[in-house]
Image 1 (tube, rainbow, N blue to C red):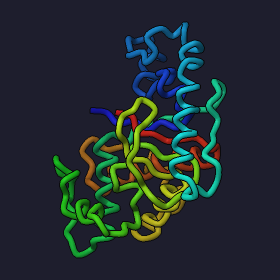
Image 2: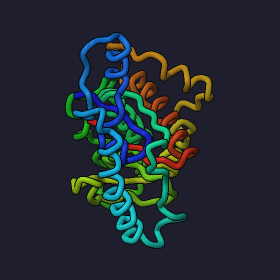
Image 3: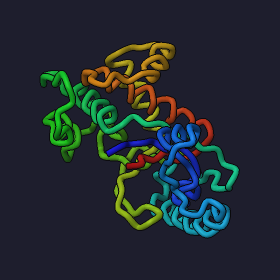
Length: 234
């Protein structure tokens, strides 16, 4: 199953008025591709119908988080809000998560390639164990949505559609990604940008982790700079 990362308004996301890289490439070739909005002509009406639900959900979430928030929980939910997307894939994302977990459990031997059941890996289970203060909590704790405001916790709650999801902070994720680079690769911005250009079909865990790191770093920067939520799509 593919894994994409979306940055933009949640109104646009839940209306399906966006496309991932594969869909965009297919459209540009004139090939058949999945249309997220079943009736594209009604896209504006669809967003108008969804927007009040997103605003109400956001207000309820801000009230629940209370003084844990460092600033108002607000972002652009209009139809003109920018949006971005990229595809790290599950292999890339899982490799990055394990790279982070092994970075804080150095006594454990990291696998050369991503295990099939990587979410059960011993380093990851230690990083997510109750009571363990992970340096990379907003990456390793099964977060599906990052909000554009600073806070330290991750938490599970209902998303706009009422589905349970773990949420974190864009600001904290970006800082933790920078900390991970400083603790392991010590790569320059130019190096990181180059990592995101090509993903080897049969890459090692580290190669795949670098690819996903470049994608998440770039999108987290967009999300923080433009104050937009960031979400996994699968």
